[in-house]
Amino acid sequence: MSTRRQTAEPIEHERSVGAVEKHAPLPVPLTETAALPVPTESAALDADLAELSRAVHLCFGQPVGANDDISAYTTKADLARMRRQLAVASKPARTDEIAHQAGRLIVSVPAAGGIDRDVLGHAICEEAACMQPSRFELDIAIRACRRHHWLSIATFVEELERARHRVHKYWHRLHDAEMLLEGPTEDGEDAE
Image (cartoon, rainbow, N blue to C red):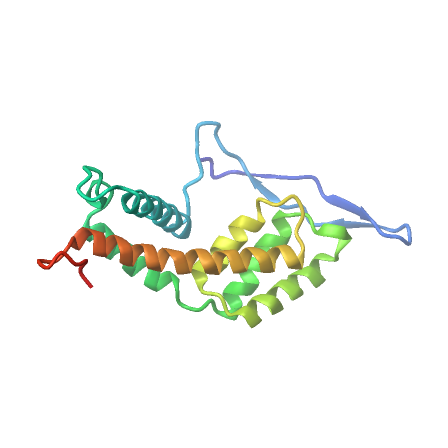
């Protein structure tokens, strides 16, 4: 990826009064066509946990004694690494992290219904502070909001609730995978 930056043209907005307001141009990085963006640590963890979740789901669907078991998908070391990473990512997001993520979000997605970006940013920060998300939940929600055509406060709250449910499911799937790797005990019961 090139380190040079290209500057986009200033953006003009016409207010209802007829005055034209100019905003500072945003820096646009120059990229080579073959260069792919490197996923953030959080996105990589999300992908790993989603894959583990699918593997656990497949293993629970197999009849007892089937060749397809969880050890084909993961190891105890991988599970321990994911558990440590998830524990670190599950720490509560600080207010400055929330403000930073909200600022990045409102710049990258158009606001629904012509909502003023400052008002939207403050509302998103306020909602996030009330919901007290973890860093991981906030990151998942922000990435999901970027996939929407328009951003609203309701969209952000819905995505944050979905992210919270998803992280909760990941904790359960990690536990399930650990139980599957341990296998049944001598009396035929699953390990607890």
